[in-house]
Length: 260
Ligand code: DAK
Image (cartoon, rainbow, N blue to C red; front, side, top):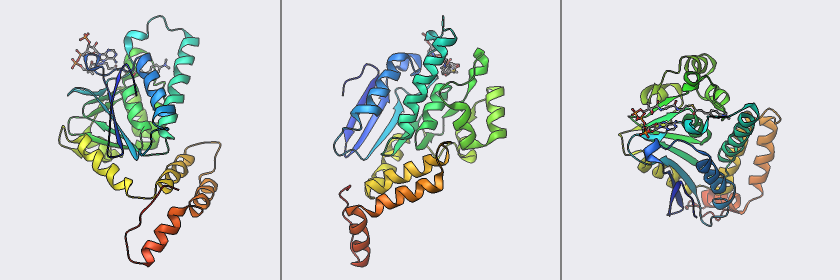
């Protein structure tokens, strides 16, 4: 795996991906988005033995402080459209990734950074984390799915207030509002994310991926979530792991899953 702006570490089935532009507080420039696309649409899908991914930011201050504002100059409507579509595609690839993806947020998650964290399946955040969608300060609205995913996590009224005031949400409020799954002491967010992935890693992998797909279906207008659940359920019944899980329960032993 070779990227310009991502560092990767693969250990015990867990791929830790660090967005590595600390001097710009890990702002998402084009190259970083290209790297993320390469990772989520190809490299990680092909990685043998992968049980889950942790996405985090380099340095002590920031997960991702937004899209890279220095690349905004000279952007016209067509450029904005292309940029938004590119970001949407990549963030959907993360949201639809068939293995769990956890954002470990140790600081600013602003604009595109908040949107990136929201496209992950779970958010573990440090007590210093700050979320926000400050695009109105720049004369913009979020362009990477933020207006939609923020509603999904915190509801319409809160989302509108955050989007219109550009106020930041601290870790405790993020937890209370459902944006964060866990708040941990600063610096322990990757450790906690690993614990969660290790727990999920012991479950049947196909069932885990079907749970992701079924939950995502609730938010996809062209799908009926209940119908999708039936489809995904039927596919889990077809797996070796279902037979193993049921037999192990009846034989009072631990199941050994093979991911098929
Ligand atoms: N882009 C580029 N550089 C950034 C950056 C960003 N988003 N955020 C920080 N930096 C850089 C700073 O310029 C500074 O660089 P130097 O001056 O040292 O070269 C360095 O990171 C450290 O930042 P500060 O010196 O400002 O650090 P502080 O601790 O004082 O302040 C801060 C931290 C996070 C409060 C502050 O840096 C800040 O307000 N940053 C900007 C936050 C922000 O507004 N982010 C952008 C949100 S808008 C679209 C799709 C998506 C989007 C838009 C359009 N289309 C499809 C068209 C998304 C937009 C956004 O994400």
